[in-house]
Image (cartoon, rainbow, N blue to C red):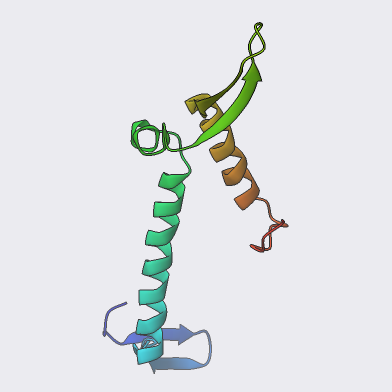
Length: 111
């Protein structure tokens, strides 16, 4: 809004001059704006971290492994380290993102 005066004419009553509403920026309003911007930036970072992309693939591929033990046909026991496949990581990311968007999600650890 501008700082010009507004005139309102009422039928059969007369003319009244009104000042436009002025919103003064208080320190509390400035703090809320800054917090809002921080939350927006955090939200964007979280969405990027949970969205499968070339960047998340480079970050997470090979980062998660598990050992599996098996017995050969000759009776020898062996342990093999297996990397979690990218397709599985994408499914996990999608499940986490879906859970985060669930309206009933309280943000507390479900266990």
